[in-house]
Image (tube, rainbow over the protein chains, first blue to last red):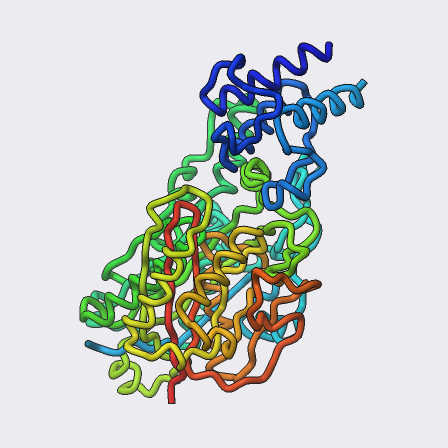
Length: 87
Length: 403
């Protein structure tokens, strides 16, 4: 289950970065991947649609949102948490 | 070049059904933003807005008129009537062809679109009302204003998102100034507070769920409003000849494009528009006493706008006042510059500066005099009104006190 969440999140991020999923490192930041604020909003939307969850994310101040966007790994962890909380 | 003055103003928005009510609310720092009352609000994650409360169109328009008027047209007609009545104009046959209407709107007939999409998609109806098109079209408000007052000259709609009204009023100003027309009804209207209109904005994730707090460190996004403001712009000698009361003079206008990003604001594009308006008005920057900010309450806009003001005004940036009345009436998108021009005229005429309410904590990135929370008495000779739209389109108007 958690592997598939991870793979799906990576696939979503890879699509925004125009990369292959294999090229997305777990410690890569959005900046490393060349994903801007619009790309991030699109990724959050894709995550919500894919997992049927609500991502606590405010584009006004992404750093202050509950959704940790430090790097790919933190986003995967956050989505795993949201999916687990859904039960 | 000919000089252009304002001889009438009208408004309807969350703060009031007239200019008097609106200005009174601004002077008292009243917040018009509250819980939204609309269909399916429980399915929205953003449930606040600057709505015109207890709005009852049946008491203002005939049934036949209402079949043709979307709410954005109704708002424009309500504001136009107040402005036109105040101006005391009589549209004679000779004046009719020298008079027009240029109005701004962002979303046009969204209520019509929303309810008819519901009908055909959700309710599976296969027939819609015959007047859906004349109701929803973006020029509906401008056309109906021209029909109501027999304005037979240049009439059209400007749609540049959040800068629509300022672009519209800039056009009206230039037409009179260059001799194309003598009288223009201008401003803008918006009625985006429908389910689809808010749902679309939710997607961008720049909306606040609790309040609009421009320039405050604690700001967390914009809040939508609705309504209209319409002005009568008139050539100075024309106004003087008929003994009209002059509310203010329009002295400059400039517009620029960032040509950079579809949503992220750009300091240079904003600064060029502000500086351009000063140059067009042929005034020194030290003459500006008040700026009605675009001030949406998003992190990016407010920070960028303050930096642009510093860039243009230098040391004078610390002596002028800048406030965002969106904190009270919300962001009227295509109608917002028009409602905000009321605050500029109030500053010039009445010497009262509308406050930025909801201000909680200073932000080092917005360290200007933002007139926090309480209106202020001040003598102002020149005021600017900023509008910076998605799409990177900036439009700034300059007004002067008329003596």
